Image (tube, rainbow, N blue to C red; front, side, top):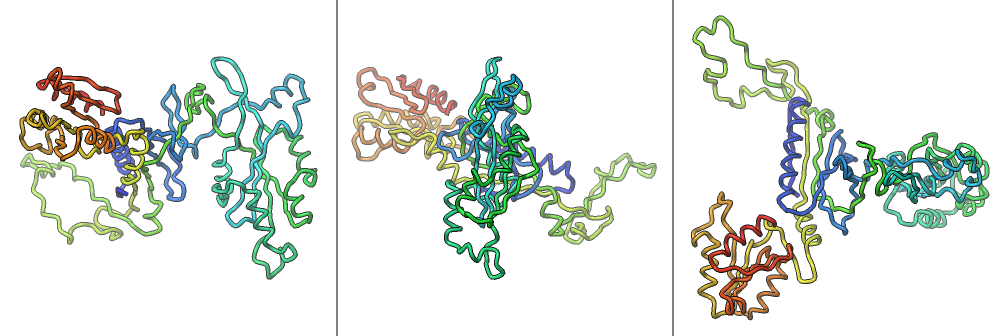
Length: 465
């Protein structure tokens, strides 16, 4: 993990620093030349009011990113909120079709707390209205677990079968001791949360007939279960493809799987205040006065060298006024995670396919033994005439000549397995036409060039990698 911590004296400076780091991260990830997004994110337990996540788009990703194809809005699923319309039941009610009412028009989602004492049931419509291509239609609705997690922070979203987990836990406990002074577990508790689209008549009916439908009542068969209803009426529906964008209202939202590789947080005084980490800001330069008759400014005059004796210490007061809490930021990139994500996203049946910026070498040269002299010429050409590559030379190419004592076919398979961005071959085509083959597997390109044209065309391919 590459970590960065920033400290500023004012919120304005801290936000400028945060923006500089964010732009730097964007520039860093763009060098890989694969799809990535910067998404607004929830700061979670770390705290702070502003954060962004940096994701590579991949079908095998563990996160879901929501983006708008019209305005460029991007956020992670934890922050995303659906703007889907009414339920089918509401639409039919408006059209005097009350036959849609009933349990079959709604769905339930169950979640269990970490200590297994709480079950949360979310009730939401089976279908919600969406607008696509100027037409109104309906889509299946799913519960948004992140909304419920924000309402009940102790929910354990990792559980795949919450009801089974809950009943197994309470089966292992003697219900006769539940609620006694010596019993450790608290009374089991069910909280119901109803989506704002659910009509009050349905809610009243549901709450008045708990014993007829509640699987928890069927399990306990006692009055040990306490049931309450949340007073909140949130939007519990998970966002879907083509839902209206919360920023531009166009039905252009798209869900993509992604893997998180970096995160930036603006923490403000979340940690500096409780830790009493403060600083006394330096005073502003004094304005020019009539006594300054030599024409110089305060900044022109020599200053005494700063030492630890004249630097204001945090909390010391100082001549510039009272101390202020430090404005903090923390930022990080998962280096090892990034390598694994690149390998997963860019590999195929033949092997790896590294981006140029992380490949062990940008180009590998493979030649039949009879063309070793010509292969050396290609190598020298790519290395800019055989000179040493300079660190600041953007045109230099990092190339390796595979001169191992192996067959041509073995070297070619090994090059595919390692994942060099560009492979230069001197084989049968060179023998028949006097041309080198230049291949970039990731781009699906394979062309032939004369020796004098190899360098120019390899550079063009690398610019795309």
